[in-house]
Image (cartoon, rainbow, N blue to C red):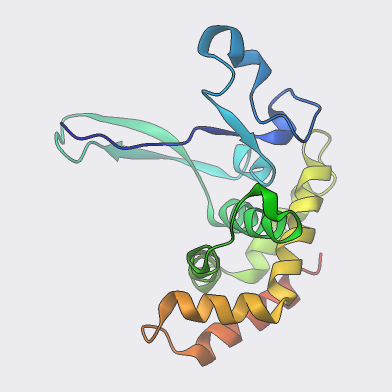
Length: 178
């Protein structure tokens, strides 16, 4: 039997909790318990910037479902927020070199202008605007931090040219000035 641990997370700004320290989703607690689905800052854009994709079971290709999957602009803010929040509040968890490598991978395949356009659509959104602005601030802070670039390089060792990592971080620093 194959077992894998998964984390179910909801965007904090849409979770129904007013407290930044509470990590549950109140509407789901009576049926599923306090910790079944957590919430995290930085996921708010994913509720809107998403596409429905077919997901097929690895073991049985007859089993599949259409699932909404966050698009790259939402993933960039989610990863940037995770790293940014943890850099500011280390008690929230460790920042791993892999997290910065993941952020670089997303930026390396995305169009900065298109990402900026998508993010700009939600900066003043009634439900998630404040959280999207916070995510942009945290992500921009990560991109400005020289240590982030060096840690992204460590994530790739010799697999990616360090000059390309530098170039991507510089390009995205400018792109996230919204």
